[in-house]
Length: 377
Image 1 (cartoon, one colour):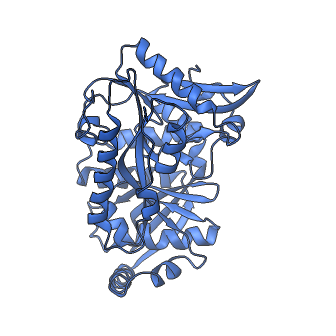
Image 2 (cartoon, one colour):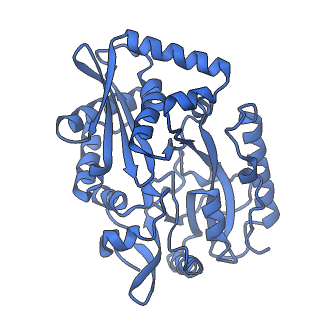
Image 3 (tube, helix red, strand yellow):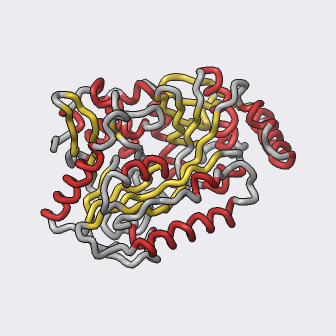
């Protein structure tokens, strides 16, 4: 049991982080520790070589929102309102695995240690939410008491070699017409976009505009919190992987989106707009879904990750929806019942089919109807 991600070198940690797992990378996790503090890391070694790890965070205990277990799994009888040991990044909604593909068996030992830690602390169990379904299954099959419960999806896009033009060509006629009209209105307003590293004055502008955007949609933290986040990222080095798409109109910055580069993927993270002095002209849609694809293609990225919010919008924009699940290990074997888990997963997939099934291509049903293993079966 290590006290911090800082107990490992960036090289040894990132060696066991795959290309689609930016939010478990050393620099990102270290930035979160600078901002929120460290809660430990369960790590496994073969000799002196790190082969697998499970970061721990404080979790949210029965608080409404993205991590409210009783809301996620209320149809599965269990102790969802109790306290758990939480794995993954702090409030992370994309938790891949930190493990060597040649040493997957270590996952069972790591989960067993986590379960024992939870039992000693008097907790109900262990939970790792927002895990891509393929990774959740890999994790769960290595412990006989692990359960996999679907609860969300992450939007992502394949980056065509010709960027937005290639993406647009694959959409239906109605969506193509709508997005072309948005582009015309965006440009007719006098907007222009440049891409630059996130540093200096751009950081301050980003903090201001992101704060305005968050306040508009009900987020409480103010500019000081955003500034502290960027300061923590600068300290960890992950800010050096950030790129800002800066939208200017009449000589003023009116919108900014912030992406992070990680190997072959680009990750959209923040958007901000100057609602105090400017009127929107589709800056969000053009920056996030048009200009960013062109930027990603020019830079040679293969995938573009768009997180878990506003999935209806992202599906309409042509994103793939990748199912996410929580891996749950109660400290006792009394719950949940395997049949209840199977019923929950089937119902969740069916709801997504009803919600998005008309969007051809956004759901790969081979992922959603996978025979998810249940603990105790």
